[in-house]
Image 1: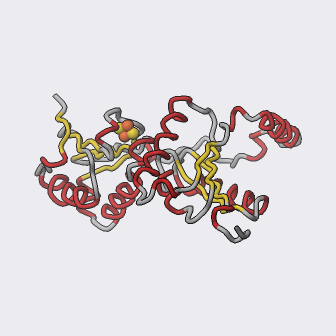
Image 2 (image 1 turned 45 degrees about the vertical axis):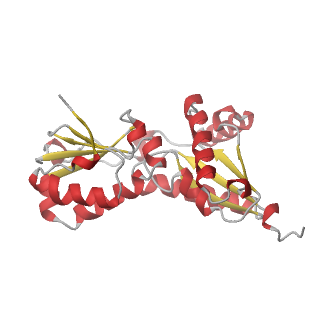
Image 3 (image 1 turned 135 degrees about the vertical axis):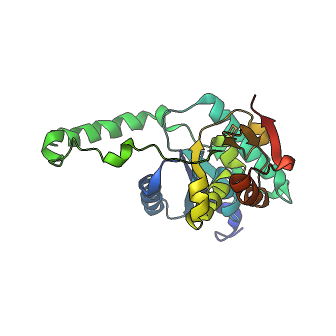
Length: 251
Ligand code: FES
């Protein structure tokens, strides 16, 4: 074996919870860059448990030919049920590969909140905070102002609630969410017809990726791009139900 043998290489996946907007993604990106500088021999990437892409299966796909993949959770608080389920995601990913026996070892590093060193880091941050000014000194003069538009209730015929919980995210909900948002950005009639919102787990995870359309009270599951397009083109403007992906009717 030579050092260039891929079985010697380790990939690290920094696994975060998704957040709203680019700021959350930037923070994970910065952490990846710092970890790459500290671990030059490792391939360091980021992934999200929920609400954003890449999901853990997508990140595992992208690791390439390495001997070992270490998944490092970088979120607090931890959650034992979630940690158990994330291992299942990794096992399912392996099971889907053409040669499961030839895939890299996958290990999960301890949860961030359980690391003794985290308290030391927080203590350092608190030393820094000791020299910072009161919030009033850094706020703008208009800090009490909230935009008037925040009182307006948007008028839409339908609300589309897209599940971006952990299981739906692992099943590809992120790509569907981005497709829906893009379609809506490009279509003024669709913007008028439908408000689209992300939600956490809606519970019947085995049907994921899942979304609910109200006021119709229709639950669509096992969605893919073609089904989503049909719902956008036929249900949202005209109420035509995609029976093939309907898993439940409310009421
Ligand atoms: S994660 Fe979507 S229904 Fe549970």
